[in-house]
Amino acid sequence: MQNATLHIKVKPEIAKGLKLLSKKRETSVGELIRQAVFSCYQLELLGLNQIQQQAIAAFQGRYISLGKLAEEMGMNVLDIRTWLEEHDIVQNNSFQESDIENA
Image (cartoon, rainbow, N blue to C red; front, top):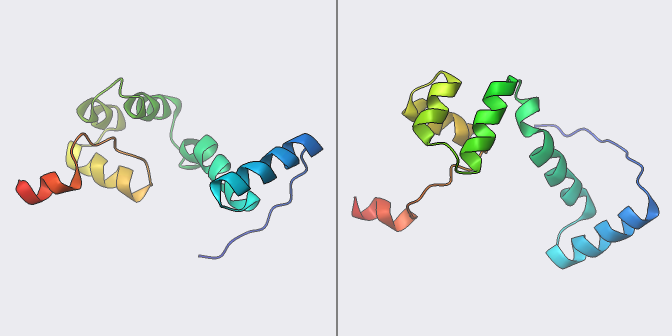
């Protein structure tokens, strides 16, 4: 995958805050910006309609179940799990990896 370069202008106090935060998190300012853009616009960039975006937000906030999300997205539960994984959307699993070994 090839990356694109964008240049942005921010107020000096924002730049200073980002530099401090990047040091605290041991990452670059560029990575902070990439994370912010991804988290803010991820669902819109996927081309989802408003209802689908709201359903995913409700799922991420644990207001609706995976089954209800699947229904809103027009998928079955197995397909929605795969879709969420493919699009780097956290699934809020209530089990731990060690549970899989014991299943």
